[in-house]
Image (cartoon, rainbow, N blue to C red; front, side):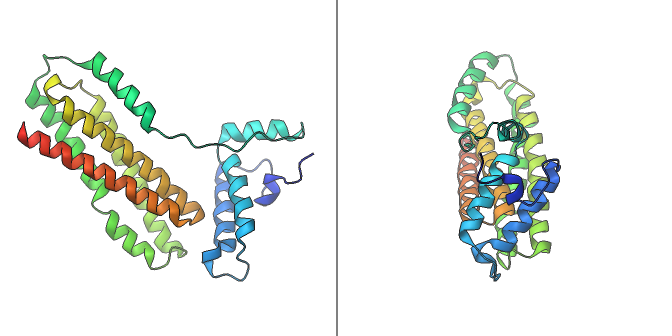
Length: 231
């Protein structure tokens, strides 16, 4: 039998929607987080709340958990998958299958590189201001809502950047630029994941990791710019 029911931990019904679960989790984190300065702050309880949300936040993992509730056991904790190794393999395969010498270099630079580079800047450049504003009080709903709006806009820009990047096979001559752009977009995605986790549990480690992912992404972007100017 289970000694802990994750639905009870989050104080939601087993029939609760994913949005309800997310809202309940965020409310509990604000209430019990050690940095919230609330009298009810409880580090041990936060650990349990995080464990519950880690399972219930993902529909497939939640279904598995629901099935196993009746069997008396829960599978091991859900592990977040990293993209880097898979991205490297994917990109290498992509390069082999999509190299077309006939693609015009100037056309690719104008229709792919420049739009993607612009979108990358739109994602990265506002970050420091956003973090400065949020640092005034991360538990302030208005400041957090503003930061979440920025992340949502970044997701839209990133999706458009990915679409544009894949819209044309890159000429062999710009393989180095394309590779750096690809890894730039990959790290931006990882960074956004980390920032979004911070908006839910207020753990500063996610904020720091997200910031580092954006720093690496910016490094790749600068390298792509340098190579394109040399070319």
